[in-house]
Length: 320
Ligand code: COA
View 1 (tube, rainbow, N blue to C red):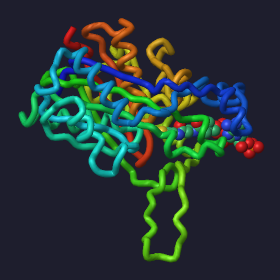
View 2 (view 1 turned 60 degrees about the vertical axis):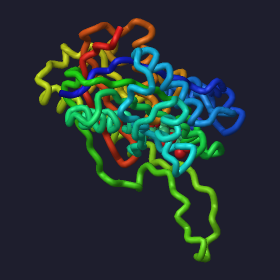
View 3 (view 1 turned 180 degrees about the vertical axis):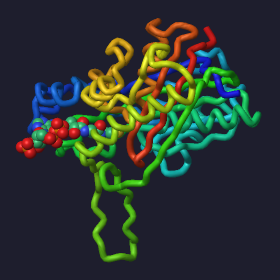
């Protein structure tokens, strides 16, 4: 017993920030950003809270799944950008959509959606839940230094949700973590109010080249693990949905795997890296634009802060 995805939903903020807009803020250019990342624009929250965007995504997923909020047994939100440290983002979603079930957040940065799917799968397999809402949303614009050209060109805000039911469509799932704050982190305001240090605002910090190497090697390793553990061939996988961080990461991993370009789905150009939100937004777009067909096999692979990875193989068989 694992799960079946009944429906999907996603929402991105209205405000678009193009590469040319960024070139007016830092020393960069559209040509540099497109050639080094594949990103042309990104969405930035302005006026919308995380709760607003998560609730809209959740209601769209529930409608798509034909499930009402009172049928939910659990809500899990994968995020590192919640509106509050407490209450959790999931609790705020629960209240706003009118659900009465337990709710909690998962922090696994860009791998958060797959971590949340794994947690949901355990609840469904144990019989503790029958219907679960998984939301994955991030708003990294709050934590990016908009004067740092090394990082600010990469990220955007966005995310989505899926409604899960008991089922057998999860063919395999694998998570990894290797604690490392050196190459990717967002600092916490840890200074003691009784210490002598002055508290200054700190932003997302990253060693881009190290993250790049980590991402490519782990995508390849995780894909090979999925193929081996699930006893499917690469040819049987219809679509690969990688975390949307950099088109060069996607292309380098694809070339090492020797898989055709047409199987690797991407919306990176429009949204940039939306952290935990990137795979659910892509999944929802492919669901709603008719790309996905019943019975197809999808590989979802994410990597990011932690350092973490999450990878799963699933059969596509939604409610409609
Ligand atoms: N515009 C113009 N120039 C820029 C720039 C920008 N936005 N950002 C960096 N540069 C400059 C650098 O200062 C450097 O200049 P120098 O050679 O004079 O020192 C030059 O471009 C090359 O920088 P480098 O870091 O070698 O580029 P890169 O090819 O490694 O690409 C990243 C940088 C960040 C795009 C790339 O490393 C990357 O995408 N890494 C993964 C990041 C990621 O995905 N993080 C999230 C994971 S969840």
